[in-house]
Image (tube, rainbow, N blue to C red):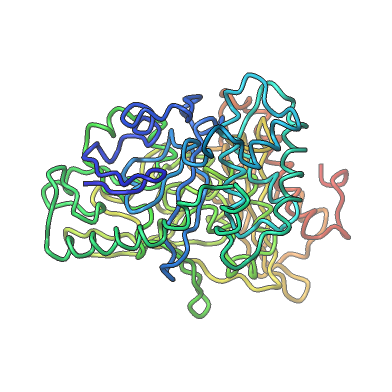
Length: 494
């Protein structure tokens, strides 16, 4: 039995955990303010807010999510907010809605609800004072009518209004200002009670008929054997939503033991269900890779980054998975666990891929965590990506590079490339060629030529073979230009 709060109402439902939150709010609860658009997470018309109780038990952290790709099971124990849940009585507009109206940010109105929810989520976040944060919060929303400038002005106006928002008890202030209804102040206590009741029921071994434990995330042994592992849903709910609705799912999104980023000695450990947004915001990762947020802004949009997990990107096995390419260059390994056999093993990420969309792990193995050697502050690292759109798009070709240089010589190197082979590639021969070399125009040119021999792109909808070879050459050159701008120029390399 799934239990969560939808706006100000407690929901208990036996609807399939693998069905979409979008369909539940529209067809089961008849809340049609949330719109159906692309059903692929691109347009943002179906954006809702999902709030999770924090460890202090007193606050709820809200994130925007595209409900078309949110498994209903991932709402369990959380607070889901649709536009109906923020609307004030008697048709009064919230400050977010008023800002959009005042700036002419709505024409046909179909996308407007998504913008309202994303900006309301920004109002509730801890990033309200960061420059450009309001505008960044709507990077997953598309509008085909207004040309965006009116919406950008609305976001800027909202940013000014939120300058007075206190850091202590912000929800009380937001409720007083009309950003959210007053019931938001009661949600932490309600979610705490919900969690306590679920934990008590789980301790008693109660299992619902749909195979989910009272806690909503476990499966009995028989069901687990045939369940589909489901994380953020950003891939599987695009590929086969109808099948997921009809089959048992093992939900791993939000599981405490599969979350978090920490440093242990010279190793960085990530829980498999760590999201791309958590990766972007991690102080541990930012300290080691200061430009990581810049790279990850090229990965999808804020709502999708809030949902998509790092391990999910690996297991998708796409030849152009952005996180996969990034972590290959960082030398990542994964810990695989077979719970039925009680066995674990560690596997270098590059050994996970046996062929196009084929993995070397068994069907019963799940990714438990991800580890990588902590880069030194003197190491060089860069990620590059080319796609038809700069943001919210799949790469045509992407690449990452890591170098360690001491005494003027390359001591170690790792290079990766996507979109130029049937699997996410590492380029071992190119890396080996660089080791022991002084960085020069001749050295880099030699590496660029060798990389062409290690790749086998094909022509498809994202470009011809020749185009992809050109992109790979340019992206690899871009790494070295980023690392050594005083020694190299693009004209010399290409």
